Image 1 (cartoon, rainbow, N blue to C red):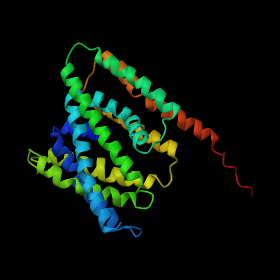
Image 2: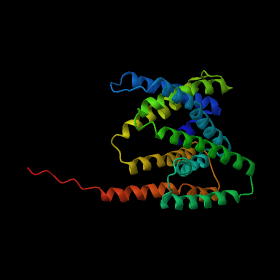
Image 3: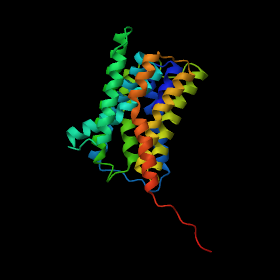
Image 4: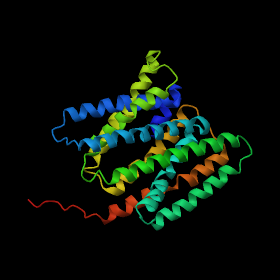
Length: 278
């Protein structure tokens, strides 16, 4: 998501057009992977239709994220990704009755300080509020998807589920796109391919494959690195923020620090492999 935001802003596409490239080309890649997969398992027809219907939520989630970047910029918009685990945890606590861990409660408190610092700025408050609103809406939709999918990934293929949802998002994004669908130049085509194939199709494919070999702490750490990609990418394409916003980002992205510390802690607990005796 972090890199997708960078490329979307660099391309200059409007949010629905960006989302269309992601879901259309992304589903094409995932479908190709499934076509050559020997272990693919398709769910029942009614579940297939349910997952396709959830695609509209997925498409709206990505649109809202790209919309937030229009108001916040890439750097600040990417920093907002740091609160996504907290929103997912909140929705899971309300719907699935799961409890917040002490680490998440502490992170939520630190994040709140970051929002207070952002709100202290005297300028562009309307854009700031709109951007934060779209960002929170985006992560709330994604949290609902995560909770909805959690029940099904135990028995269904995550790759099949993602493919069906991504395919289900195509009609909505196509109808809502106001700009020309076909790229107008070689540069636009390049950005479209990067957004759909690299940032979506291949990214989801590699992510699903990595879940088989990576531990949960390492997966959490890798997801948090999306924030870093977005921050650095925004800086590369020329996005700039004030010192106050930079301080706020430090508080908002605190979950990255907690993930790093948690990963290092869990790594120390792993048994050290002993050399084989000859």
